[in-house]
Structure formats: structure tokens, C-alpha cells
Length: 224
Length: 225
Image (cartoon, rainbow over all chains, first blue to last red; front, side, top):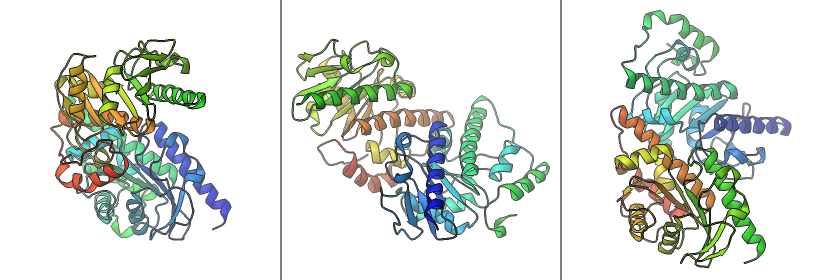
């Protein structure tokens, strides 16, 4: 792939990273953003010890899915395996984002998923946001447990860890990361203030269709 | 020490102060930050009545661990002793931050320690965040209890007071102070929902190595987390 295109994608990684930082979804040294490079088995990812406020495009690391570095620069995120697992099993995914956003992480340590409380949740994310089994970061295990929790959907909570989202574009993935945190906050608050009412599945078919047409990025066989 | 180094360290404290202020970890008049002067029993520390918005390099106080002010237009933070005692106890510590960040201070008043909730916590802080025993501020006992609360880790809650965080650099220590507040918020929220599942047994052995390699400031080998 020509260098101009790679440069453009590096910029997109920086832009998405700064966006989630400014929205308070990550702090320095945590979380990561990656973007697939064309049809090659390659991707660009934020570096380890990432400082979002001073991140520049030359710090973004170019990697092959098998872990071979394709550019110099800082070492890739130690959670690279989480990203490659999703890129490999979901060819439509262009961007993967991992955060430790606060309310979603609260749910992750209590191991509570977010049931369907809003229609918007189905359109963008595909439905409920489930909690993975506990898998330790930095191992192959984390990729497997994340994929299982994602199912056909675009976001999941990682037990005692944080959030994983993916999207057909960087802006979709940023939106999904933001939404998971927002629904986590709403669900948490609704649990404390009373008892959340869940939406009734039989009225939701058209929202599931919207999800499938607009934002679903899993292999077709996984869709209901 | 050259004037440039001196200036550089003052600037680093000013920048770090503004950063933790902008992240809501401190308010005017509370908390303090310091940097050890390498190879000497001296440090730079924020002034007493620190107004973070207006803080400039000239306000930073150069002080010896024994309390003698070397060069400053301002009085040192009244908690300089806590900083000096921690530098003396832990030679690897190069920077210290003390805050009254709200969620962590809530837990400190309720005397609730933060168990190991996420892996990141083990890597940066070395495990759980303890609550040190109460002692009156500015006393020898205050320092002693806080250092005991740290154990082999990089942060502690101080009973009915706030947070103490330390690290091998100022940027590491900012991360520690931010992380304690975030964990306190997560623990608070999780407790209200019914209580978190701790992962100390599973995660500690795996991530303590990373902690030891990158961020640990204590002298002893870790026995638990």
C-alpha cells in the first residue's frame, strides 16, 4: 500500500485516540486504538505507554497480524493480540478500540452486562452489552474471550478490565466506545435509583434490522 | 547543579501541578507535588496556599529534607515532611504527589481499601490500595503511617485525608494519582451496585513482574498484592 495512504491511516489512528481521550474514555497509559491496513494482514496501532495528549502520527506502530513489526517507532500496545483476534475473525472491521472507561469498568468488576435499555443501543451496538469471562490481558486468551462476548455485536465489556468495541470505520468505533460508556452510566444510575425497565424484544425487530444494514461488521453467518 | 537543571525541575512541577488540577484531582490550597534533587537530601516542592491556576516556576520551593529552605519567595507546603520522609525511606522515589481527590477521599473517610479490581492496577500501583492509619497531619506519625500504608506499592489512601502516590518520575506519579482516583470511583460505583469481584489471586502473579520491572519504587520483594 502506498505511503500516502499509510500516512493518512496513521493520522486517523491519532485522531481517534485524541477523540476518546478528550471525551474522557481513556487516561494516559491505558487503552488503545488500531486501524486495519487495506487487505493486507496488517494494522496500525497506538504505542505502549501511550500519552494521548502528546501522541503524534510517527509514534503509531505498523504491525503484521503475526506480530512482525513493519515500522520503527515505539513498541506496539501490549494488548495487540486483542486487536488482531478481532481483525482476523471479522474481515469487515476497520477499527478496534479498547478503553477502561469508568462506568463500563464499574460494571466489568461487578460482572454485570447491560441489558437492552434503549433502542439506540441496538442500532449501533447490536443489543445487550455482555461481559466476557475473565481472561488475562496480554495473552491469546483475551482475544478468545473478547470475541465470545462480542458475538455478532460491536461492543462488549471485558471482565475486571474495560471495554472492547469495533466498527466499519474509525468514527463508528469511536461512537461505539462512547455509547458503551454512556449506556453503562445510564444502567448504573438506573439500578441505584430504582429498577431499570428493559425493552420488550418483540417490538425491537426493526432496530435489529437497522443494525444489520448500517453497522454490523461480523461475518454474515453470525447474524441471527 | 546547574541553573538549567534547577529551572527544568521547577517547570516540571508547575506543568504537573496544572495537569492534575485540570484533571480535577486537586483544588486551590490543597495537595502538593515534589521532585527529589538527584543525589542530595533536597527537593523542590509546591508552596503552601498553592493556587494552581496562577502557579509559576518562581513559587516552587527548594528545600532540604530537614526543613531548611534554600531559595524561594514562598513558604513550602506544610506537608513537606511527608515528602521528605518518603524520599528518605525509598531511595528510588523521584516524585511524590499528594491529593485530596474526591472519590479516593470518600473511601479514606469510610476507611475502605481498594481491592485489586483491574490488571492495570497491579502493573502501575503494585496491587490493592490500602488505607493508612489515621494520624494528625504534619507529624512524624503521619509520615510513618502513610509509608506503612504504601507497603511495597506506589500509592495509599490516608485515613480521613486523601491520597499519597509516588513514582520513579513525575509522569509516572501523575499516572499513579490519576489511577487511584479512577479506581476509587470504580470501586465506589461497584460497591453501590452490589460489590466487585476481586482478581488478586489470578492477576497478581502475572502482573507483579511487570510492576517490578517498570514501576516499583520499594526496596523489598513483593510478598502479596
